[in-house]
Image (cartoon, rainbow, N blue to C red; front, side):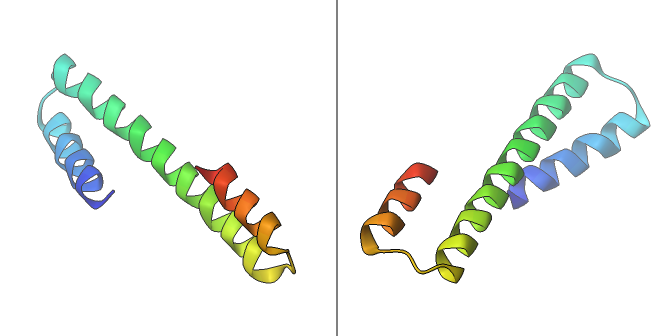
Length: 69
């Protein structure tokens, strides 16, 4: 994620200096990937929070973790 953030920042800087269609398409693709990764991470965090705050059986916990994969 950190590498992707740095790449997006570099591309944004370059696009601010001059427009390049190929660079813009790569920037958009990286930005989309970043947002998808962020959404996935938050979903994992939410599920783990539910597991940590609830009283689930070992099997229920296992099934919740498997559903995240």
